[in-house]
Length: 106
Image: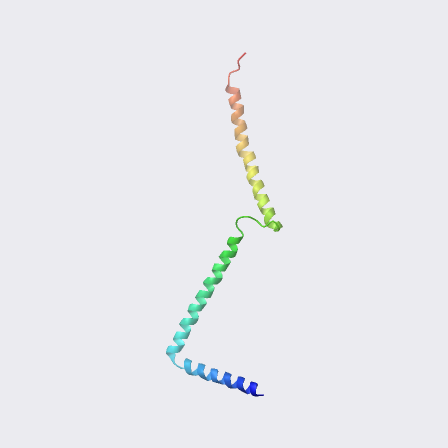
């Protein structure tokens, strides 16, 4: 029973001290400034952690992340398809033109 009385006495003392501290306008203003500064710091820390999480996804993909590997594979195939359609076709066209323009010696 003594622990319950001590605990409630401690809480009553804290409440009285808090009331006495915040009874002055100057102390309330200081507390609001400190609260707002803390809120800004916490929000910026959370944003920086989100950015780090976004950055960890770049680079080498995890071999066990099937969806990410499929996306990388599809991206690789897109560049190969572009190369095949554009670059190789242009090279074949220029090679065939060069062969038509070259004189044939008999």
